[in-house]
Length: 282
Image 1 (tube, helix red, strand yellow):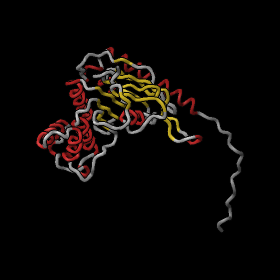
Image 2 (tube, rainbow, N blue to C red; image 1 turned 90 degrees about the vertical axis):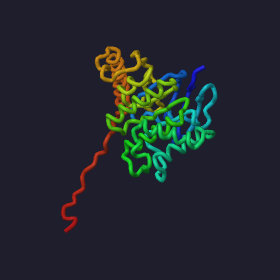
Image 3 (tube, helix red, strand yellow; image 1 turned 30 degrees about the vertical axis):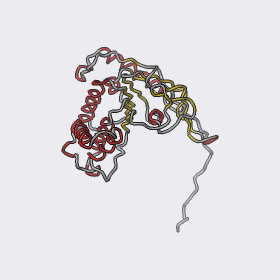
Image 4 (cartoon, rainbow, N blue to C red; image 1 turned 120 degrees about the vertical axis):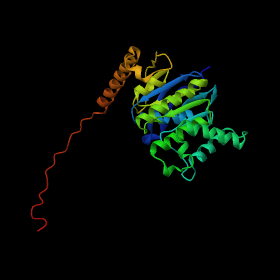
């Protein structure tokens, strides 16, 4: 039995002439402990896919199964790191994380909860800002709080919706490594949504492209045959990395060009003559 399974997912919004078809014929299985990355274009329906898996929305047809059971709502078993920060502005860094941890571990003492908060704040390098509120933080720091909050709940599955896109290169690289370290300790199942092919290859076991919408669907999977732990400095000299990277980019370019061709339409312009405004304002 797959840990996560999407079966014949179709998702649309609206009805009749106003219906917008977002996802179609989505079939995906992820095994326990596996790290999968989905790479796609902006506007291809990646966030809709995340919301379906997390139970925030329901498919128009098809089924999402987590550990063999239908997903019918959100659960701290599936921790999500969103693109935006989703922090409560009136709470400090510690308080934002504490609320999530308390919800995930209601039987733990206040001391134990505070220790968890402290550990994860330190992990993302924000110990110096633990008592600051979101409006006192930079965008990158807010995203680090969001990462710490999701991971501190110790979810059985980590779902990441382009969580590192707003960060500077150094912070992004550090958090990639921290997420991999946490994943590697107990091999929690992970799904990464990204538009960065290199990030997907560095972090995942396999990459699956999401074709552009409308009616976006999944393309062929690319298995990452690179031994862990992976060293960023050595990847550029790794033949498997170069071959996989080129294959994925060529595929994305191909479907991107197909989308452009389909989008090109020829319009016949009406014959118009410019009006003369000479002397009108005298």
